[in-house]
Length: 285
Image 1 (cartoon, rainbow, N blue to C red):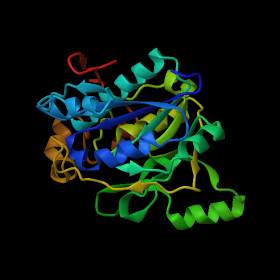
Image 2 (tube, rainbow, N blue to C red; image 1 turned 90 degrees about the vertical axis):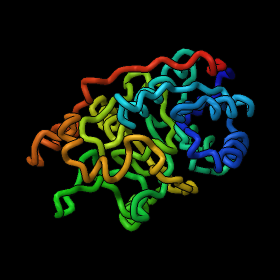
Image 3 (cartoon, rainbow, N blue to C red; image 1 turned 120 degrees about the vertical axis):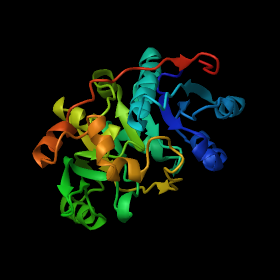
């Protein structure tokens, strides 16, 4: 490891296989020194992890028990395995990059030069909105549901015009294209939210805010986002998560219909958080 090498961590699965070669070409083209570690969460097979290893990737196979653990548990466990590897090897910066996102070769260097606790690019997300958050809470939709508190592009453009900069301080940016300083990774682990539509990264950012860490978005570069969908992810479907109230209650994600109670649950980690061991058979540390 070089003294200025950035740790690039990515959670992936066979769902992203069609993008793999293109994504690896993009990462390998980064002008800043870096080392890539990938976690494979594919259920029931080690074949994709072996494929990654054949391509020269430092890969860890995650053992996901889909009968006991929800997708968010798998994601928190996987990110904590990456966190462990990062801390064990003395890196100064952790770059999270989803395996369906693409940025130019110079983009990583630009984030490093900002020298922030958290800084990332605005991944295009839901309903053509950027993955940039005003707060860690949610907004009621009027039909008993809610949406996350994200900016619109128009709101961000107005801020850039007013503040005369493309680098803006925000509550958070999606973890799919984010550079984090070691001081943050040292202080905070990923944990599982009780209420399932609130993602693991949302809770992580709330914990960052509680500890006084700042988050920034660089609007000078827009990542290319090619989402592959969620239909093949066990225990993560729109019907299961948003439509099946009985399942949510059974897992303790909601306790009643009181929005205040639901909001309190948002900010609390699931007490069942646990780590899963990596599969030594495919880990090529």
